View 1: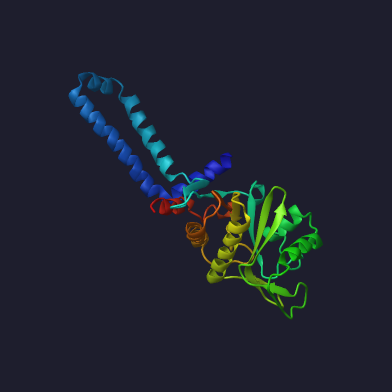
View 2: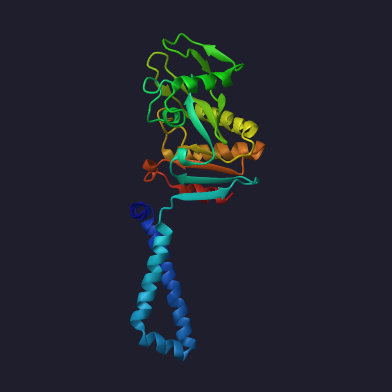
Amino acid sequence: MLDEVIKSLQVGIARRWQSGLAEALSVAGAIWLITEISTKVSDTAEHWVKDHGNHYSAFVLVTAAIWFIKHVYEVRSVSFNLPTTNTKIEIRYGDLFKEQTGWLIGVGEFFDSAVGQVVSKNSLHGKLIDNVYNGDADRFRGLVDAELVGVKGTRTQRSISPKMKYEIGTTVVLANGAHKVFLVAMSRTHLETHKASSDVPTLWIALRGALESIHNHGNGAPISLPLIGNGQSSVNIDPQHLLRLIVLAIVDYGRKAGLPNQVSIIVPEDCFRVLDIREIRRDWRRR
């Protein structure tokens, strides 16, 4: 907890020390102005300030310091209402798998299940198979295949199985206790190296497909998603721009078709120093 507070102060001061200083001087100036007016109209106030000068100065300094910290402190979560809807969007640092909601997770166009061979064990896709399905790749694959029955795919000359790939945006819905897991094809996979890749247009299409599936099959239940596109299939854009893109996709779809009342974007702790989630909140609160 203390480490998080220190980190929030360090990052916040590095980003906003100038505006924070301006805020501190502003509140100090406001106190001085009130004091000047009070001492001009009240002898009692004038005598008190003269008799308690040290206390008064300490009060001004402490108030200015509090105002400075309040302004620069880098928060760990923000939220705002999606304009013209009942949906609230929350952005928070944390672990997606600790969220007691539905999950949206990006996967490759083959919906692979071989952790360590094609699916990185460090990816959310890999962690899902390991943590939720106890590493049982065959069970995971069987559930995915059952959901893909009737979905149009394209057979490839891939050297390993599965050989069927699906269009970007194709979304598989799996049960996870009382919640659901939405797996969306959001990256293309090289047939020989099995390396995943994506880009902004591809991610946009994937998000549209995923949000449509959440709208149709999520029953209005809260949904959580990661900083999708920032992992193994990196879209290769700045995390701040990636977050803006994800929020824009949610807002755009939510305004047109409707989404759950609670949509949470859970961003990884290692992005804390490169993301400014307050900026995202500020931008959308103006709308």
